Image (cartoon, rainbow, N blue to C red; front, side, top):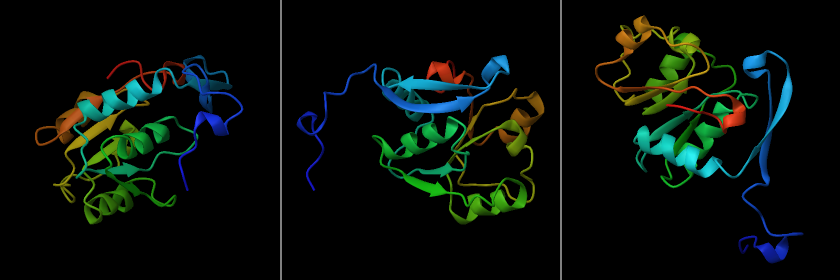
Amino acid sequence: TPPITDKDRVRPLRVDDIAYVIYTSGSTGLPKGVAVTHRGLASCVAQHRDLACIESASRVLHAASPSFDLAILEMLSALSGAGSAMVIAPSSVQGGDDLGELLVRQRVSHAFLTPSVLSTLDRTRLPLPDLRCLLIGGEGLGAELVERWSGDRDILNGYGPAEATIAATL
């Protein structure tokens, strides 16, 4: 099947067209839908991919709920440009030993996790030697978690509301 082109569409795609809509309570605590355009999406993903050193041999975990914009970043970081493997976690794997064993078994090299999920992993029991980079976000990251998980891998702390195309700073 040939690729879809502008001839096949009602009109050409524009950078300010909506790429996706996501439901969030954001920093206001008030539920709302956020329409994210294509404008910042490619550069956001490229920046995350470059800073996390994601390459074709990488194995990127996809575990975020589709209701969390981090799920978009996980998918696009693995699939755009680098052509990495995307390791899809079963919905029953939420954290703890189940997640740690999945990371070991699938040789995950890159994981994007909240501090709450990261804190459920037992590094002494499962040191996760293949895990080269942790991107942490969605909540405040405490010094104890950084100390426990740093040293032999990169830790990137991301922050940003959905309105900022996933993240505003990393």
